[in-house]
Length: 288
Length: 288
Image 1 (tube, rainbow over the protein chains, first blue to last red):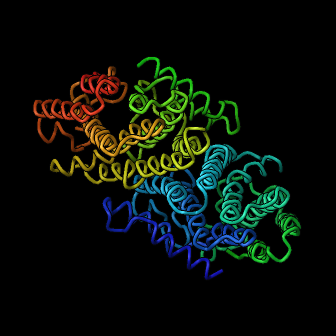
Image 2: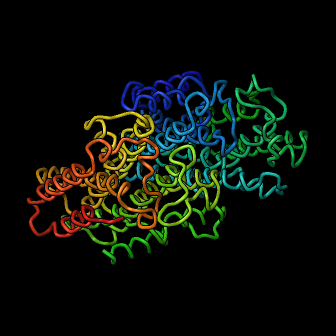
Image 3: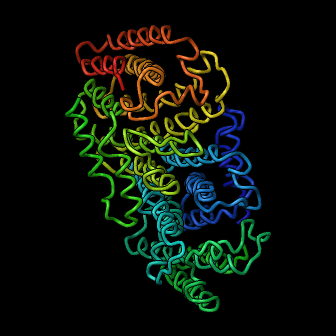
């Protein structure tokens, strides 16, 4: 895991514009939010999925970085005062606190564009395959994916959602990009059979939901220092969460079930799925 | 011109998610900012450039729409309180006024993603050509293009820029996307010779700068009702403009020179450039 995290850090550092390139303040801020912190869960998933298809690390580091750029942009925009209004992220001041709101807005916008530029520019497969990756990542990021999930999240404040509604929100808000990470990683290697592709997709959906349920649990059980972001803020903001919906004990049980189901989806891959299995375990038991 | 504008309106309406699709408020807001208004200068340029290479309208309407989506997103984000803080755009309340700030943020983010999804999804050329389009549009939108120009614009408030600095700012802020519109339009048809490609690129750069100089002139000579956006706001915000730099008379003269230079670049295309010539004339003499 550390090797992949280090590799992604180095790739992002190489692919982001240099801090001194004009406009320097914008480029510094882009590097500030992307480098030096973050669990890199999505890149880890991309690399682990790439193992199933024999993908090369040179390709995986590109798609992993593209997904991470989208994730980083979403955090910057989510933290803005008009959204979650948060001051702490990855243990550091959020972008608009360290720089300013306008810069944070442009940082997010620029990171999104850079993600697509990378996928279209680098040598990561046939042109058809690259286009499929652009389509997949764009769809996962937009109004029918991550951004759409944020919109549902906003409209849900103070409301009580039932479980299917909560699942839809999270399937978009967190799940879509996690699924994209897995699929893009796999697309870097040999094509999967239809059956294997569907199994991987099932895994990705379950792992995405699992990640979010654990996030909800940590939001109300871990402290701010451990999380590197403000703890307890979902409850404070009256946001619907799994813990709010079903209580802490049932949320833990639900997470354990999702974890088992995610692992079940991987059975078809045998020992090729070692890294995905380890990552599922990491996601289930993470403390931050 | 009206035929192209109507065609782009219909294409955008078809390609944007339906207003009732979940999350409905986000999709309504995306349609609100993209449909029913706007000069569609970038789509017009894409169609006119496509004439040089015999591009089909079916392809041109896609790339024109993708560029317009990027333009629409940039207006929504520019109008936000943390940027230009404007209440009027295209003769209507800005997105964050009609909806709210968080929705406006997500509208911009979603429109950007949709632009790249379109270019990667539609049948608008060989996969190689489509990838080139994604690269070109992403680069033109990001920190070394439009978003970078916005960052320079922000840092220039209250400062006096010299002419090369002002030109760099505008080359990025407005010029990059206008150039992308021209290039994407041409890429929908038969390949241009290297000489013709360079001539078209020169045209695009000059037309982009011309567009901005006229914008500066209109900002201080036209009224709000005619412009459909707040007049005089650059001066009020102490933003550097061509009128501020060289005075109104010299700015007009500079615009006329740019117009002549832009037309000169088109000489190589003979009468194939009729629509680009007419558009240059439109941009030079527009009143809003």
